[in-house]
Amino acid sequence: MTSKILIVDDEESIGEIISYNLEKEGFASEIAYDGLQCLKALEKSNFDLVLLDVMMPNLDGFQTLQEIRKTSRIPVIMLTAKEEEVDKVLGLELGADDYVVKPFSMRELLARVKTNLRRLGYESEKPDEKILSLGDITIDLGKYEVQKRGQVIDLTLREFELLKFLAQTPDQVYSREELLEKVWGYEYYGDIRTVDVTVRRLREKIEDGDGDFQYILTKRGVGYYFGG
Image (tube, rainbow, N blue to C red; front, side, top):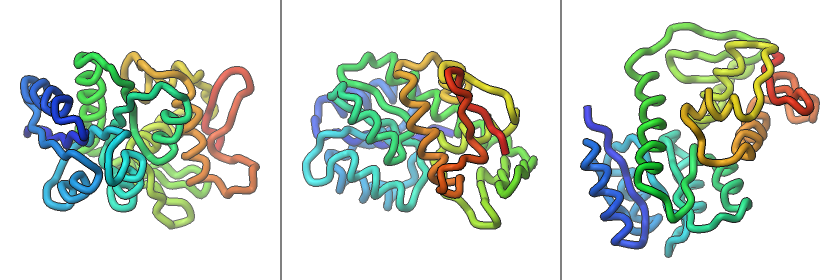
């Protein structure tokens, strides 16, 4: 089944170039030219992934991402012309799964798209019935669902993948570089700050909020591990 990708960029030429290259690789695509068009397109059609530019009129990429995350966990890759750390971090904190800095090579962008779709497709095509119960946390690998004390916790795809990976090997410490390779699934072009931001978002959702972490723990100078 052909994956359908929504490209959101106010620069028509960029959207068309991305669309052309995606379709050469066998993907279906549609272009929206601002955040409002993006949200309308998501209401009307089913997409498998969103490529979302940051600098746009009406709703910028960050505002659009916030609206998307109110109702959907669809993988979102941010496209940003800025290299400032704050932009990358803000996108990740708002729930982006990945980001690519402009100008990017089409090869890099296609690699990001394929990896995010591959990980999502693996879960949908090969459901795993196994359920992990660790303390107050229950991870249903088949339904891609996490509960804490019976309450469903809304995680993005990347947050779920990180939690799942760490929970499957409790007390095993992984460096940030190892997590980028194992969880993000390819030679990551970004920096290790991506892991720290995703860990912080995950902690905000699954920990009790008293600063005394129970599940995602830090081994100072080494990395992270699951200790529940």
